[in-house]
Image (cartoon, rainbow, N blue to C red; front, side):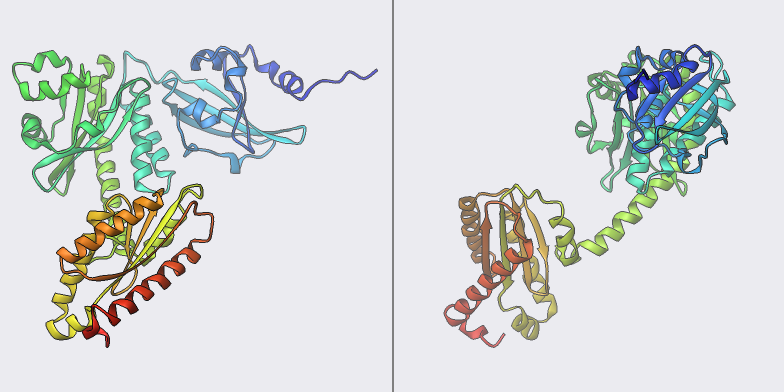
Length: 452
């Protein structure tokens, strides 16, 4: 009688040959990137007790400590019977590896099989140029594999934090009013984020750091208690964050310091190594920040009304696709009364001021919600999650604001308990009601504008 085995047993038999090898072996499903197998040596290095711990977890999460697919993924290149050979630095186990990978087909499934040999280049007592080069190359590969500068920066900070055994990695950027703010951070598990507490920090707080930055040098604090008397202002900022040691390096663009970035609480033996690493990667980070600024400016031009600073008609669609269909929705259409007459009689500057006053009324009353200018004299407000009574109350407040600011508008609104209904239908209903209100206003309060 033929003996039947389960699929999981079949896989176990397939990989058990590699269990006692001294080399590192791991296997992942190529269709869903989920881990299938790690041999004893691999499990020891990654701190995994059994294969059951990796079930359902993505290979890039387990092997690289990354939330995104590895920049060095070779899945599309793999073929049965052929090996791709590479040398890589792995930030999770902190080893430089010679990796051989291939494709194995079994039971109608495709698996990526990797065998890695520890080259011993990452020695904690002897970190040098070769390790720096490996880390820089790996960090660049990972950050360039994602498609936006924001994600590239996040991936690079995560990689640095994990590779350097640090608790936090961050970027501070200068603002226009002589302060710095924490714009990006990565935190290790169980480390409290500090970003929200570190906005608009006066430059004077890190004045002594800037003196070193101006000379092209980084700042190393091996023990924060040593700066208590020498630099008490910095000490008062660092100790509440549970910072014991740090390395920070300047970010310089065209000869001007635009901020700095650093690493908190790394192992002491890595401090000098980190300085060199941050100086090398600083140039790349500046390029990413410059690219980010360029993308943001393009987005502003594409999705922001330049006169009022609120969204334009192109931004409406982007906002609508993000709404939760379970949430209630309030739609308010507004038409500025008398804009044409004001443009004709007092000039376009006066007309622009009327539009700005109108938008400011909407901002004050509906500041938590999405505002758009969708035409020359038309505004749209989308209130996701608002209750009908609250919408009515806010429209009442808006009418008061309009009266006080001499910013008359015709209003039309609708409310729905959810937004599963096509948004275009709700917009049309609100628009129709706005025109009804406009006709009534022309017939009563604004007869002199009836020819508008």
